[in-house]
Image: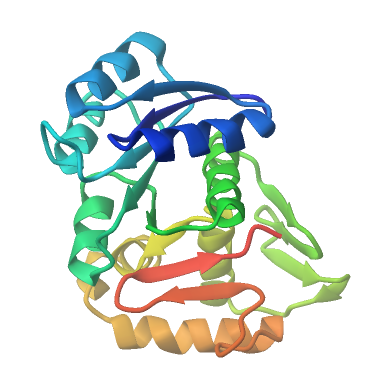
Length: 226
């Protein structure tokens, strides 16, 4: 899938590194070194996705996020040296779809970007998802792994479908709880952990060495892209 990707990053070596990696994947790349340039290019070129550094010279990257969210819902992947939980939550709450901490691996970044681009098609209304050996049919509320029925409860299925609809992308605890159990359960993180544990068991997943469900402690969960 060829897409226009906008890099907003003040460090020229990182921009060059990202350009090389993205162009090798067949993408078209635009670059900005400041928040002002990033907002201008985002408005002018309407890229398919943005890779955004939070530490920009003229403004915090959070202001760029808030700015682009005034007119577009394009996926934004945040890059930052900030690894603290509060920083991640602030970026996600401001409208980022995902967060990668520097230093990062090229493979991980490209995989997460593919997940963001794939989300655009999923959000168009597909009722069937295939993630490697995992198949999920939203219309029939059925899921199978390597051809074997997973026999999920309704809530387990809804949780799997939500994570799969954002495969490769971090989904916050708050988003999951609100979407599946409603606003009254927004703070019930322990409740969610129970369902994550049940879903892992049915997927044959190991929390200590996960294949499917990855945890960002205190922030949320990510389903592997296949």
